Image (cartoon, rainbow, N blue to C red):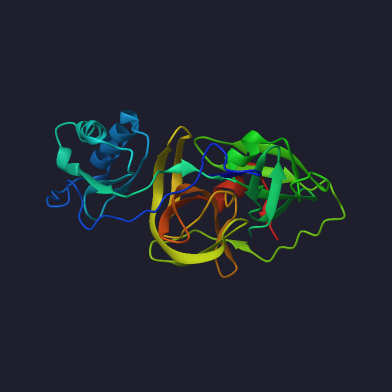
Length: 283
């Protein structure tokens, strides 16, 4: 998650540079036939291993559960993950990255609540009421949001939030003087898609979707599931900002590691799930 205090960093602190290693640590050389049920059991085992600083997803094509481990995961953590595969340790393919997977609290306009700064995601409407989506870990830490750090211009309250597990929140526009333009339609991301992300800290950056339905166990931040993984950079304060492809709304910035000087790995909450959860629509 990308969360940021208005003064310095929030719980997530800063991101560190991330670079995928050239070769996986384990599991890449062997790819025996493994059906979906078998890989699902291995994925469940990785979940139960509960190693902070890891992200994982099932790659049916290669017959592996791909696990990405950040710099905090040592030998003991890797061993725990491999043991989670039971009698088929080769089912786990482990990749290493530098940096730390952390929540980052910090269509990318800045929003301020309590000591935190996040980013506005997508404007939505439901039952004639206008609101916007942002990250759930942002909604969890602030009940009311403003357009400025001095909290002089009200936006409105956090109506609902879901984190961990998911990472989305709904904030209502109570200030009728504020404009809230739309222009996006909801869509599902696909691997290899060229995307952009906008946030209140780092602005707009582009990259590629590298995996779908990814589970991430953040450092001291809980586990989120069903995430979109990308090689787009992000920084503290970008949390909640939009991931998009042209006018296609894809996701909300959740967290990751790295920065926009050296690059990074970032995860996003699919926007379609948030729309369904709150019964709202883009406009």
